[in-house]
Image (cartoon, rainbow, N blue to C red; front, side, top):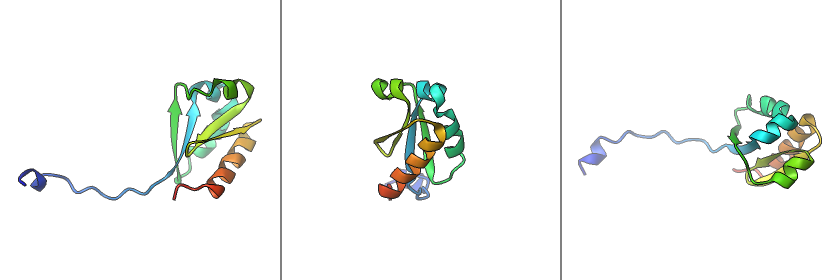
Length: 92
């Protein structure tokens, strides 16, 4: 019980939708979508060295939204596809 006196009280954190980008795919064209999404407060952005989706990465740009792969031909379309995925399957 003594230890509980020294624990900091944690503030509850709001859940955010998670969007993950492959570093290689950022270099292949997803960086513009990343730059646009990183400014948003409702999304938590994560960069991975490799997401193990190499076959998708070779074909075009993509992101992983709350565990679901979203693909597009260009960055603007990718942002739209991410927004659509968030509307259909929000985290909260």
